[in-house]
Length: 144
Image (cartoon, rainbow, N blue to C red):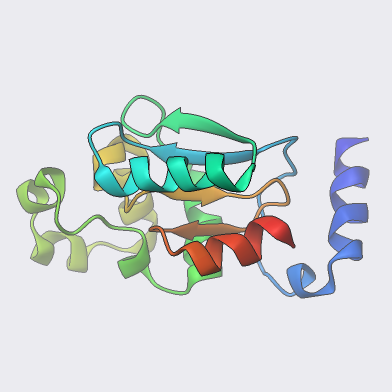
């Protein structure tokens, strides 16, 4: 039944059908964030002001799944939108090491360490994904 609902929703949004990778439908939007991240706090505050209900998930305790990260890679078109290049985890791994990774290895590394992931990491209820906080982009995704 869930797979049928997923396709019904996808059929209702033609632009979403063009996305080659989608995550299953969810009842709520999900925001993976980190409490010590000022951008994450700003995004969560903005969501509250806009009256948009989300499930807030601590990205350090429960990072996005490999499937969500793979969908993000294909939707966003670049690994650079997935990596938090200013964080300690990224610096410890090293830019050269990250660049030498294949996609599967990079996605596994991201799924294993939420601090490697650019945040906040938004997954809409219909499976669209973005990283970072740009209010205009978020509003477009969340109100669609």
